[in-house]
Image 1: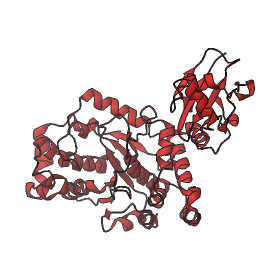
Image 2: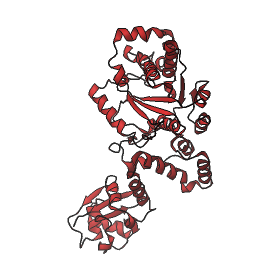
Image 3: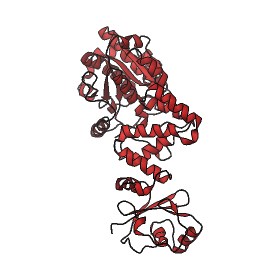
Image 4: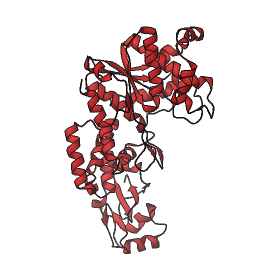
Length: 419
């Protein structure tokens, strides 16, 4: 346990921490928490950093709490926001909480006896609070002058901040106090934009209970190119497979910039330090293999999506010419069918390659298809074919009556038939 803070520092998780945190952890098993406001129906990859932080604490023998913000989510955290976000309905918040909770199953050990993760919802104690009692018991311990100096508030003063959002700090501080009392929780973790909220909770515990509490925040970061982590041209990368497919999720990590891959591996891999160092050393010796990106993508996708990760990986390897499509299962082609244009034809026998190219949508006419074949631009199951007279043979059809066609380097299509 005493080595945990050093391990977290090596992995880049420590942006700020209370001074006595290491000694507090070394003295015995602790309970800690991190809060997540359910403003969307899914976690996104940016949430993985604090979730992985909690997992490292669990692996080190401590007990993590994932606190779903069913109550605070009704208010909205002003931290890191340029303007006030629209308030969500209670029904939407409840649905978001339910869907996010389901995504935690593979990320933590729910069977461990002494370190079993708890998933709680602060709506259970915030929604029933009486206003006057809350102001008397909690609000009196907060100085408005001090709150105005907190970064989450200070950054919004010029643009304006509502009293609703201004009160968010009190609610989060009360969460910490409640968990301190009910679960003996003495540590809160989060992103660096939460430091002001966390220290407010630490102060509240000290004032009300004369208790000793601690905090740790991880850095908020952008990619080496300056883009926001977890954002792509296609939008946010979600953990919910209905919002971001396992294939696209895998591709997000595979496409990690060489300048970012070391940081990402330290944050998102659970491989031991020595194993990571060896992996990174090999990757630097021969960056073209992209071994580090492959290891990162495989581990994170498997952790988030389980068995579906294998199909996503094989599908990617097929499209990039690194896996023989004849060896792929029907499940892999189901994955591909969600990612590339897919057409269905009524017959399998007697189909010419020209007809296949046209029906797949890779060419608008038979003449265009013929020219593409003659010029060597058409591939059947990743094999170039220049014979314009070719017919699709029984051996060309892959699992589940599927034919993989390619035009040029990047234009793919699947032709499928049940006949």
